Length: 283
Image 1 (cartoon, rainbow, N blue to C red):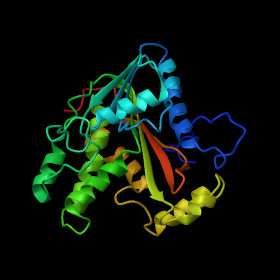
Image 2: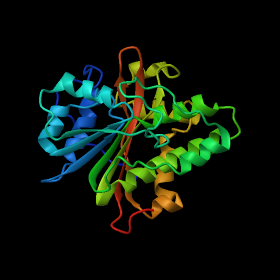
Image 3: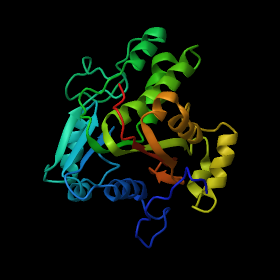
């Protein structure tokens, strides 16, 4: 195994991944709890949505301050209410995580595409994105299978056949990692959870087990069977080798994959983990 890979802590449950409907949720929660500091930790979860990926009560035990970030703040509040009667330590932040602009958002509106620009204008806005709602002193920032949703918004905005589609997705990936780093304190850690292929194009995901999953996914990647712009190996390379990211990211590693079963679909997921360098904050 490469030094750029790591193994998340195992979930202590006698059942197998396939037999555990909420394995994905428990895996994410376990990782977030594992990285909590001894005291006074600050956690930001990007793309929290209805919090289906999270066990909020477990997180509240480990993290005294949790910012749940999403463009639809009402959806997040509904997710909190569905899980816990106590909002202690939980804070809902409204933030458009694609273009950083909440002006077009109406309160209590279901998520929908609100990006009128296309082409150069869209790309220019993306490169200037700021997450103004977030702090810059988090101990941990986690992007929970959000990047695939953002890429889908780009597809809806400019289309895969647009001449600027590839540059736009490239800018989105780099900017997302850069903004995660910007939100971290020096020495803080980032977790980029990324779903990158589904059973729609890889039906064998439903029959995969931890032993044959790496080979199955390796073949899929060789055949370019993955979501646009979300080849995990390429994401790892960007995090390690992009000039701007090199200045602020350290200890970049990627986990082995697992399968996220949603009932009608299954998704392959990995986590890219990194540490914010103890240096001048990115500007």
